[in-house]
Image 1 (cartoon, rainbow over the protein chains, first blue to last red):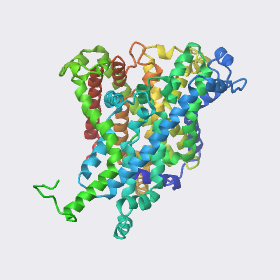
Image 2: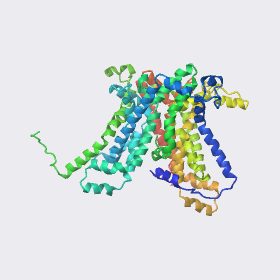
Image 3: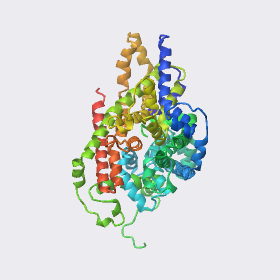
Image 4: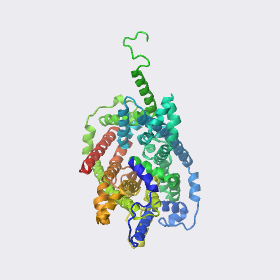
Length: 293
Length: 306
């Protein structure tokens, strides 16, 4: 986890390479960076501008940059569209199950792998590491068959279940638990506290930062997940937002209702982007901490 | 159970305490272990099993009717021109996408780390934003931007160029699909390179500076070699990720036009959709092997020589 430590420093460190630069280079550098930033943000700006334009305006001039008349009509129509509210509720329910599952399963497993001595520990940790390497595309057919066998096809539980205990969360939790001094736990053991008591009373209260990272990472993964819900959800009643958005936009394409699709795109993006603006440090840690996604 | 022939260890003996400790630990591991078994371990083994059968989606209700067909699926795969074309498409995605993503990420990390002081955090946030964005939403925007009368062609029109119908042209669809992949991932590369750069000790640069090494030489002889482990990690990560590319081609073109953007993952999905579970599993196993092979080769090639 050296990368995580480095990133924490990155936030607080002042300019570490304080070598003098020629004054011409700096404005140029800032100009180039600003241009790159603009290019990166173009899709976001475009979806905001497009979702605020009327249907007539989009039809007459589909590639324009700015709305002539700002209107919220697309959003009103979006929320009247059949199923959209349902997709949103489904996405929230799935995300809640996934996040709760990750918090419970990963904190317990991470604690055991870092702080408990037991038979099969090396095998268990090896399995966690190996699980991170298995490509989703290699297992989705059998995962689907299992989900069908469990009677969970086309249910929100079936959509959420594979994501409730991700190896990455366990790995983050284990690394964090390993950084907590053993003496702290030993002292409690000598006082006669059981492992569960130590876990709940001592470890969990200290695990705040790791729990925050896990919460954010698993929410992000669940909210943005597309292919698995696409496979498991078979009727509109269990579509999540991304699947619903893809389906609605395909339907809307026939009547070229771009306004509706762009409004939908913005609504799907917004929660994560807002969360990201406030908590970007944790997002970045989650990605760089494991080198996994 | 009063007539036990082999007595277990007496209560309170050391072995029993160890057994109890193990039981407690496995209780902690249980929630993860159950999901892991159900959704990773069993599916991986079962996928290999499926790939050796003629299992179809319609057979799920009566699995005993399924025939063991040995390596037939794999033979069929490598005789299937569609699959071979998809391997080439995927290789193209990797060959163009990985270096491009890494180059953009590396340059941005370098500039953010040493070139500028102010607004560093803001720029980092902006460049990382695509990583967290929903791919379905972005793909829709991409689709509209690259349609015949879309934003991209309007911009080209403004400078007097007639833009093509990007996503309907077999030669142009792939570059657009790759571009979306690069846009979504360069932020990850940047963040990992930034972390690597922060770990390079400052006094190395100072010593080089005193010895009269210029910025360019410092970059070539200090930064690049010291970043080798990071570079290795990023390249393996991106290669493995791009080898499995699914979302971008599925959402932008569904593999078209004329299969020009169909990836191996999309092939797997299409076979699955057609009910050919055996073929789908075989194709996914070929991908699993490709992922393993690439990681191995890259680790060998980029292992630092000391």
